[in-house]
Amino acid sequence: MVQLIMKTDIHPANQRPVIFHDITSDEKYLILSTVETESTDKWTDGTEYPLYKVEISSASHPFYTGKETIIDSAGRVDKFRARMEKAAAAKNSK
Image (cartoon, rainbow, N blue to C red; front, side, top):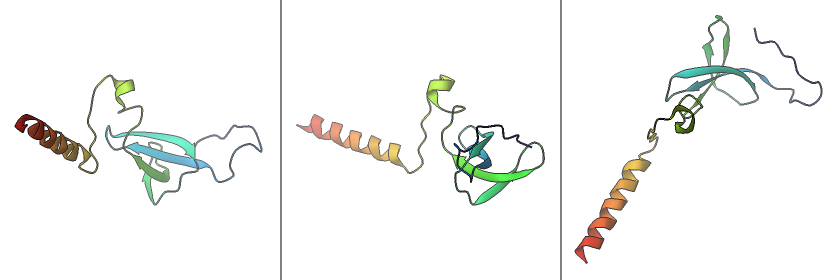
């Protein structure tokens, strides 16, 4: 169980423990949050908590990991590379 020890009357009333799941690194964190969620997951203590999936956290961000990764959730990298190749071909044909 997460123990709530905070100053009174300065935090939102709807905060609760939420599991944040970094889908890139598969790491999970249990922290207090007000984020709205639609799914739940079990934590290591066997208790079920709301689940919120994120693409990048400190477990997968290049600044913290020292590793460069490309996260392409909507084909943006491929579209960018295609534009760059087209621009390079147009420049070379001149």
